[in-house]
Amino acid sequence: MARPYSSTTSLSYQVTNKVKCSGKGKDLGNLSSGCLVVGCPDSHRKSFQEFKSTLYTNSISMNTTTTTINKDLQQPEIELVVPLPADFASLMQMKALAFAEKRQGNKNDDGTKTYGYYQQHHPAKVQHCRIVRDSAGGAVIGAVQVQIQGDPPDLALPSVLRHTLVKGQAYVEFIACHPDHTGKGIGSKLLQWAKECAIENGAAVLALEVMKKNRAVRLYERKGFVVCKSPDVSDECDAFFQGLLVYLCLGCSYWTVVYMEKDLRVD
Image (cartoon, rainbow, N blue to C red):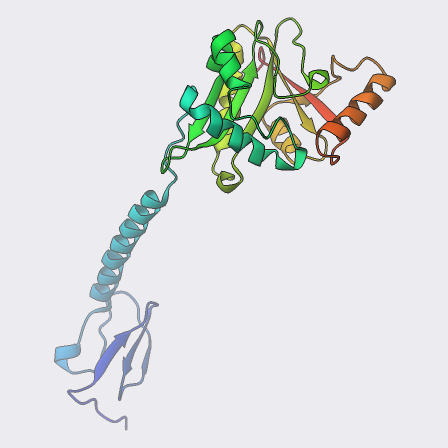
C-alpha cells in the first residue's frame, strides 16, 4: 500500500502536463485538463485546469515583458541630414577610417580642402551629401556623396581617378560608415537616399564603382545594380592603366574596379 501523504507534503508543478508531488510524493503521471491532483491533502488539492490558467497568465506577462525589452533594445531611427561646416572635419575623419586600407584621399584634410571648398564655391554639392550623426556625441558615423550634373568631381581623389558624368547620370562618389557602427542599416539607408536624390535631380541612371573583392558588390546587386562597362574605360589598355592607378593610389591592395549602374526608370 502506498504511504499516505502528510500535511507537510510540498507540491511542485512541472511546466508540462506531468504533475508531481515532491517531498514524500510520487509521480502522478500525465494529467489531462480538468483532472485533480489526487492523493494530496485537501489544502494542496488544485485542478490542473487552474494550474494551466496560471501558467498561461504568467506566460502572457513574460511575453509582454520580453516585447517591451526588445522594443527598448531596438536601434534608434537613422536620421540623415545635410552636413554643416561644423561637421566637415568629423566627416573627413570618418571617411579616412572607413577607407583606411585604401589610403583614399588626403589624411591631413580637416574638411576645408574639400567640403570647405564646396561650401564656398559649389554649395549645391554639399546639398547632395547626407550624413548620420552619432546620437551620443554628434560625431559623423556615416555619409554618402552623390555627384549630380553640374557638380565638380570628388576633389579628395587624384584627378586621374575622378569620375566624369555622362548625360542622364548621377554618381555615388562614396558611401561610408564608421567601422564601429556597421551592421546597423546605415549603409542601406544612405544608398536609398542616393537613389532618391538622383531621381529628384532628373537622373535616369545611378552609377557607382566598387573594388571587385569588396563584399559590397553583392549588396549592390541585391539593390538592383548591375555590372556594366565603365564609360571611363574604352579598351583593354585603358583597363590596365586604370588598374595600375588604382593599385598605386589606393594602398596597393586593389586592382580591379567594378563599375555598376542602376536604371532609375525601372523599379
